[in-house]
Image (cartoon, rainbow, N blue to C red; front, side):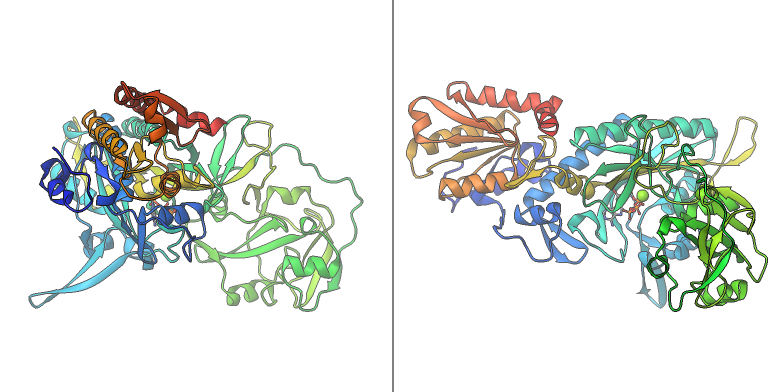
Length: 615
Ligand code: ATP
Ligand code: MG
């Protein structure tokens, strides 16, 4: 279809092309002047991290309010590409796509107890229908809706295994929406749900999703680490998070580079090797005054001792009853581990009234020696390797020194109940653990029967026996794929996209659009590349070449083709991969075939992009 060069008319011609109405990003040729790419030179106010800054500066997204963004044409193209990769891999893994509504009846959430579990995160509201008030929630996830659906339509073992998925907008009233599209109140999620008749079959469904996730993130150019995770309020007992190590990630991953052990901070075990009790003479217990000093930091300053020589005594309400937990002063307690070790369901730091009742002292002076009320005391394993420790005295403004386990206090049990730290021994081998900030892009859970029981999703087995269906659930944040890619792939000039996600694969930059031959070659190359199925954008703006190069680098199109008078005189075009230093001259004759072949090869392998990561 002929489109004239000038900026004014071609809009009509574009709108008349029915192909352009189909949202298939891989077949939309485009001219810069006809789309909307509002690039910015300056760092926008309020944007702190690279992905946020670059997505705004490159004109990919625009903020509407905290936690809600418009995807501008280029951003939307990248988002659609990520979505397409996820969809292809879900389909290839045998999952079946459907679409559930974002609007859901509150009754479903009440049946599973998740109105309370989600609290303020669940966006709910009442609407009036005729004379009735109807309470609704915007789905933050869809376990309830899909399980209710399956309860209605699946009744026999013959209908399973089945995995259903959708790509749908989710709503979560995040307390602190921040970091651009990394954490928003409205985001696009791929959520899949597997339904099986046995735990073994669930294992197979889980493995398939896990493998599909590895392929998805690999195709998206993300270096992703699957880590063991706590399953949290969703329930079930096995879960993995897919983490992209990145400086600005909000999650902490614990990783052993020697054996590959990887877990999130909540889950990570601490190895037992190496520690021993220091060989020092036990001192007598002494009470010392510590007026106004109640925190580890204050007491360590006041008494001139190191935090690792102090014992923190935390009083918890564990299933409603008091429980003391002892942690070395420089360590952090891990509530998931405490819950498992002490065999309790509900755990929260005790209210001041309970603490005062148990210790006989105000908050901040608890210790294991001389508790007023006898309660179970659990200690982290590190406590057994401490000698002459400093603890609270269960008395206002006082601490004890010279405290030793067994001689001065006993514990109900020693267990790993703290967070791992950098340099701790690996639980699987003898190496050291390292901590890395990471972004969670995906999550897979073995749910078990929590939802099928609550929502009566049952099946009849071969012997006509009724059982709850065994479920798994699997989420990927589509927007987070983009944000975490950019967060780990940029330079001082802008974004470095892999071909798989780039808004356009090729940018054509005519140096001087007013020069007739340049224009003619640019037009022809653009049309021919588009016809060859390459995503190509022609920067047809009558701007200085420098401005156009800067914008091309900022947005980060993988392959830049410069069409200049000087090159054309020698029958050449200048070609450069965004993430490589050197450009090369290629013959104008056969250029389209050569460019298309370069792009296709990179599409298939991503090898040039990945080589940049190693460089
Ligand atoms: P987070 O711990 O970051 O809040 P989550 O564990 O609550 O996330 P899941 O319920 O596991 O999230 O959701 C599946 C995926 O959806 C996540 O792995 C993440 O990629 C994405 N996601 C979750 N919350 C958001 C959000 N607020 N904005 C963008 N993406 C999100
Ligand atoms: Mg998660």
